[in-house]
Structures are given as C-alpha cells and as structure tokens.
Amino acid sequence: MKLDDLKTSWQEQVKEPSEQENLAALSDALNQLEKETSKLDKSIKRRDFLEISIALLLIPVWCWKLFYSAGLMQTVGLIVLILACIYIPYKLLKAKQIKAPKSSSVSDFLRVEKQKLENQKQLLETVAWWYISPIFLGIILVTLGAQLDESGVPQINSQMWSYYGFCTLLVIGIYGLNKRAAKKQFSPMINKVDQRLKELAN
Amino acid sequence: MNKGFEQVIANNQGRIRYIASRYSLHNEFDDMYQEILMQLWRSFDSFKGSSSIETWLYKVALNTACTFVSKSIKHKELQQAISAVVRPEGVPGQENCQAVILDKFMNSLTDIDASILMMYLDGLTSDETGDVLGITANAVRVRVKRIKTVFEEQYIGEES
Image 1 (cartoon, rainbow over the protein chains, first blue to last red):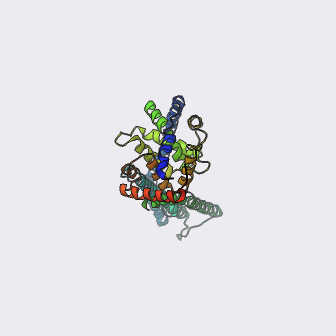
Image 2 (image 1 turned 60 degrees about the vertical axis):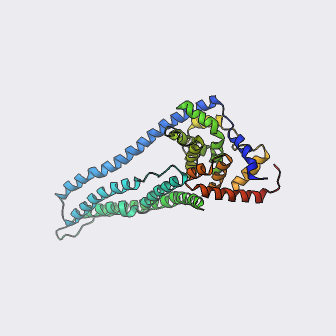
Image 3 (image 1 turned 90 degrees about the horizontal axis):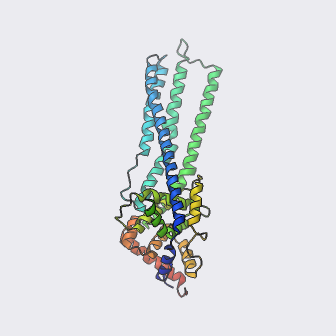
C-alpha cells in the first residue's frame, strides 16, 4: 500500500458535512462565549490598570513624606519605594510588549508564543529582585527610620519584631509561590513550544 | 458573519475534529475542539480570502493546537452545541481499514510531521503547506518524501 492510496479515503472523511441546524446552535454559543470572553479580557485589563495606577499614585505620597522624613534612613527608604513604584509598572508593561508575528504561520506564531512565555517566566523567577526586595527594603527602612533614638539607633519593640517576622514570612511565601509557578506552569509550556519548533526545523 | 462561519464549519468539521483529536491528550478533546472553534470564530472576520479557506483554517487550528493549554473553565452551551455537531466516534473513519492504518501511522509521527501529512492528504500544495507552517516548500517536499518512505517501509505489500 502507498500513502497516496489513502488520499481519497481521507478527503471523503474530512469533508463530511454537518447538519445545518446544529451549526446554528454552535454559532450562537460561540457568539455568547465571545461576549463573555471579552468581558473577562476587560476585567483583566482593568486589574492591570488598577495595579499600575496604585503604584503611580503612591509616588506623590512618598514624595510628600520625604519632606517630613525622620532622618537619613527613612529618606533612603522612601526613595527606594519611589523608585520601586516607577520600576514595577515599567517592568510589568515591558513584559507585555511583544513584537507581533511576521506572519500567521505556525513557526512565527510559536516563536512569539515562546517569547511571551519566557517573559512571564522571567518575571516570576526574578520577582525577588524587581518586586519583593525593593518594597520590603523600603518598608523596613521607613519603619526603622521612624523609631530612632537620640543617638540614631533604631529601637525595635516586640510588636515591631512580630511585624518584621510576619513580613519576612510573607515575602518568603510570595517568592516560593512565584518560583514554583515559573517551574511548574511555564517551564513545561516552553518545553512544549520548543519541541514543536525543533520539529519544524528538522 | 454567522452564516458564512457556519458554512466553513460545515465544510471543515472533519479537519477540525482530526486536528483536535491528533493534538489533544486523552481527556482534552472537547476542550481543544472548543478552543479551535473559538479561535476560528475570532479570526474569521480578519480572513480576507487572500489564501484558501483550508490554508487559513490549518493555520488557525494548528497555531491553537500547538500552544493549547487545557482550561478548567467550561462553557456548557458550547459543549452541548459541539456534542450535536461532532460525531461520537471522535476521529474520522474508524469504520474502515484504511482509516485505521492512517490513524495508527499518524500517531507514530511527530506533531509537525502529522500536520504535514494531513495537509498533503488534503491536497494542499507544498507552497500552501509551507505557508501554513512557515517553512519552505522544498522543506515540505523533503519531509513528505521522508514520511512516504517510512509509510511504505511499514505497510509495503498490505492491501487496503
């Protein structure tokens, strides 16, 4: 048997028409789903907008606080927070900027998809440097800076120790979850796309 | 748009079904089929007719299938509508010997080679297949030849 012997059989099978009345119901269901998906897309965009807006709105608050800073330590902390509020939105927006595929071919589509996934994975893997560390450091410096004694040494009471302990645990938790998501969620997807790209190249 | 789209699905549901079946894991068929339909629906407006409908369909369906991640969100009405359109057999033509051989052979190929074979059997030219996959027509021809050789090695002498 030759491969071409199967052509007719294949073409007959894939060209079997569907019943028109069932297709009308399918079309309506797709229309409905499209509306729901658009709503979901809008809510995701709204959430991103909110996150970025909060970061940007905090900048004037930190700047205003700078005028009433209790000392050098708090000033440094506030500057760190201001820079974080500028850098975090920039980092989030930059990760979303993906060049459109040159064509709609599978290879171009896969390359763009790979870049998207790698950007997201990289965001999660480096979350400690661009998100957690600056905010954590800023908060520590601002709060410590507010509790200096006359000789300039921070006086930490038990309440503050508990607070720092809680913050540390929270930071470790966020870091762990992000690392896990990068490994479990994105790595297999990148491998899958890579595999397809390799198959195309062979 | 609805009527035009319905016609496209009516004429191509076998192809969509096969792609969904070939690329999905055991329990992902419904989700994959739904996702492919959704992407076809979304891009139908932008289909300008510069390529054949089959080329457009293969591009959208394969792009979706290649990067498919199963979602837990189910759309009940769409699932019901799909069930009414898709035959319970799932893959085309399990009822005849040639289809069984083809299905078995298709499953032994990589995803990309299986796509090339689908398009070859469907009568797409090497240029069209190359356009869908983003490789040269020559590369397509080389791979078709390789697939043919493997097929003939496995099934030489077998009667349909």
